[in-house]
Every structure is written in structure tokens, then in C-alpha cells.
Length: 486
Image (cartoon, rainbow, N blue to C red; front, top):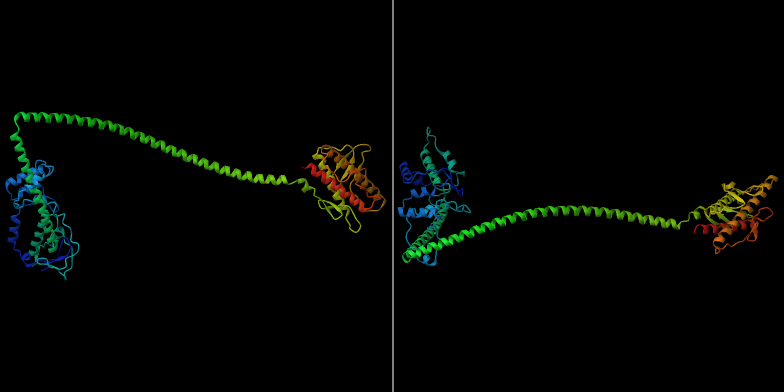
């Protein structure tokens, strides 16, 4: 007959045999009536005094165990069993229910659950393969209680079995029912705990007998004077021990004060260390910023130094007045100065070249802070002129024209006078430079209207000679410019 019960330890389905199912109410009442009533509920342990009161043991055994419990589990506080006492342990049988005083609270909870479900059912615990498994606890088992107003044919068996299992569960710390394998495991654990408790009890009894024999022997052999001396000695030892204890307490208080002082110093050091690391981090950040600024300044200094070196190597006057040659022509800033047969050079280019030459002479004199005595230079590009500052204070145009009418002939004559005046100013400037630096060498000497061996006049002169004289003028200007800018 299946009641849908499962093992409360391994959760295997159970079936009850006929002897338990057909248990008569009188037999159940007899089982319950033979045991003492329990006031505890499920899962709550019974105090040791009540457990000991319910045990059917002799009064001497109960008094012995009460003394053991009052002394913390020992009789007369034994530190350990001596070898002689262990060799004199008496061997006697265990009284009924005697060792279960200490086992009831600890044995059941130490039972390990089975590692695997039982392989097959044994007698009194038959597995049901067709009955669905449903866990059952003592609380949930009460749900199987039949309705009193509408009983079923199985109500008596279900009610009796549930009450019996609930009763068993209240007496132990493990729920019931249990299968055969779990019951065997429980019994094996109980048996092992029982054997250990027997040995422990026998050891206590032997130690108690040894202590009593030793005490009786000391009392018999000690006289009154010896006892008084021993008492005085023990009192002196007690007084010395109390003094040592007080000294130890004073030392402990002193150490506590030192510890508090050290903790205070430690906190101060921790705060100082934190402040130090904050300051250290600030210094590191400031050092990194200064290093970054230094690197920036060094990079800027390197760039500026390179620019300065480049500028130092650069001569702005050479760039502003580039003197060179183009075949037989001397050039200034790419403008040809002169005329030769077969190479038509426009007068506009010649006049512009003369304007650049006059501006160069004016610039060199100004840089050297030199003032011409008889002339004033007026650079005006292609229409530059030279003014005389003494005598009739005439003004001569330093530009020419290719027209052949009579008016232009007079103008060309003034053009020749302007070129001779330019040559005169160049001669005075060369003399000024040589007066400061005699090592400066000029390739052509200037005498009146000639430079070298050719005249700078255009009238009554060949174009090739005139062009060569103008090339000499530009060469002299280049030497003056180099000396004045170095």
C-alpha cells in the first residue's frame, strides 16, 4: 500500500510494509505512552536537565553526570588523563540510556547524507516505480490528515502513520520517515558516537578514582602543621601572584598609553607623508611645465638663431642692387647700361639703369654718412638728376634721348654734364673709402670725365667706348657697395 511518502534524507519514494500500515490504535497508543512527554517543538533541543530527568538510570549515575556538566564537562576539572590512570580504566557495561545524554543533540546533525540513491529497496523500505515522487516534511505531512467529517477507507492508516512520523521528528533533529539505507547510515554514526562516548566516560571515571585516591593519600600523610604550612605557602604564592597580576595590569596600562601615543604619532606621520607626496606631485607638475616651456624656448631660440644666421648671410643691398653683366653690357637689376651697334637698347632701359645707379650711389653715401661738397643727388628713377650746390647751382638731367633735332642736342649736352658730375661724385666717394681703408683696391682710376682710359661722355664718342666706360662705373659702384656693407 503506497501513501506517497518519500525519504526525508535522500528523497527516494517509500512504501510501508503491512506491519506498520496495519498498526492498531492501541499499539500506537502503547508506543507513545511508554515514552515521556516532550514540551519541545520540531527542531528544538531539550535541556540536559530535563533529558537527564527522563532517563531510567540510577541516582548515582545521574549525580555523577550532573557534577560533570556543572564543571564544564569534567569531574574535578581534570587537565588530562595520566598514563597510570589510563592503564587502570575499569571495563564495565553501559547502563541503559546512559550515554545518550550527550549524543542526542550532536549525533543526528553529524549524519552525512547519502551520496547516491539506493540501488535497490530492502525490507521495510520498498521503492515505488509507478508512484510520483513528492517531497514530504513533517509540516507538509499534516496535510494528509483526513477530514474528520468525511473519512476515507485509508484515513485511519494515514492519520496514524503521519502522527507516528511527526512524533519521531519531534524527538530528533532529522525529519522522518527514512529509507533503509539512510537508517543504516544513521545507526552506524550513532554506534560510532556511542563507542567514543563510552571511552570518554570510562576515562572520566578512572581519572576521578585516581584523583580521589591521591587526595586521600595526601590527607592521610599530611599532619596539621604541614597543612598549615602548605596553606601559608599557598597564601604567599597567591599574594605574589596577585602582585604579579597587578604589575602586569600596570604594565599593560603603560603599554596601552604608549600604543595610543604611537598611534597618534603614526597618524601625524601619515598626514605629513600625504602632505609631502602632494607637495612632491606639485613640484613634479611644475618641473614638467618648466621643462616644457624650456623646450619651447629652446626650439624658438634655435629657429631664431637659424633665421638670424640666414639674415646675417643675406645682404639686402646686394638683393636691392644686383650688379652684373650681359655680354658687353654692364647691368644693374637686369637693366642694361650702354649701346652698341647691332644691339638696339631702348633709352627707357638706359635711363632706368642710370636711375638705379644714382640711387645706389646715394644709398652708399648715406650709409657711410658722407656728404658731397658740390653736388646733391636727386634719384627719381628714369628721370633722376644731379643738382650743383655751388656756382650757378644748375640742375643736370641724368637721362638721354635718341632724337636728333636741335633741342634734343642741347639736352644731350646736359646729359653728358650730368654723367661727368656723377663720375666726379663717385671719385670723391672712392677717395673717402680709401682714406679709411687703403687696402681697398679699385681696378680703374677716375680722372675728370674718364674712368680708366675711356670717357663717359656720349657726344663725339663711340658707342662701344661709352658702353665700356659705363661698365667700369658699375664695377666701381659694386666695390664701394661691398666695402660699405661688410
